Image (cartoon, rainbow, N blue to C red):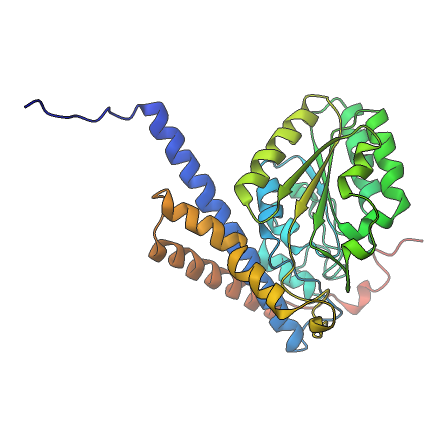
Length: 337
């Protein structure tokens, strides 16, 4: 009887497997960190330690992480009022993020921007924006600059489906297509415009708006980070090569209310619907299950990742609470007319 031998794995295959494993374990850690970050934001708000409101990103983590993993550090993003996930996925540090939310000097904007106005130029984050659709012009302008300066930088512009009602979006998409600018418009369709289902406020289709300008379009399950990453990578490379803008619709779901004070979600969506997304469509669970199926991790390993992330986030919260507030003497600084 002859012995049956398996074909040895080539070095290239082994490297690819290891690289893929590291990539998706890192992505899993990123999503878990964002989820835990938002849990702490809600806790800080409940304890009255955070001024103003915040709009939590829980449930949508696969979009930010999947897309930012396809970007370079010198590529740009613009964000939204629900922007913590985008900031963290692009490389922002949780301790300085929390400091900004608490109005502390150590924050990214020295405590003067707060939850909806965090920016971090060092990681290519041109800023979040409290105005619905307010960053579309900034993103398109950055893409115009990147092209005219002869760089191959790409800009990703995140916005919610509520921004589809803003005329500025159509003005900039028109210019982006005319001038073949390297910008990706990412519509995070989390199903609700504040307290109203998007189908009650949006005529036609979401993608149809970009199709009208001849812009490259794509639609993806925003809970599947691997699908998001694959499609985003292709659109980003296309833009980097000079082929112009694209519009990506990511269908996702926000687990919390419109903002941290929105506690009466039962008036506009059912608990059954929420539970369905959290149990069957949760992006962290979906990736975790795939990692286990691939043999890249087991349940204890994923739990270890979560515990390490939790310790890191808790340390970041402590840093922010202990950090000093800006001096009263700075009240007139950083004010522009």
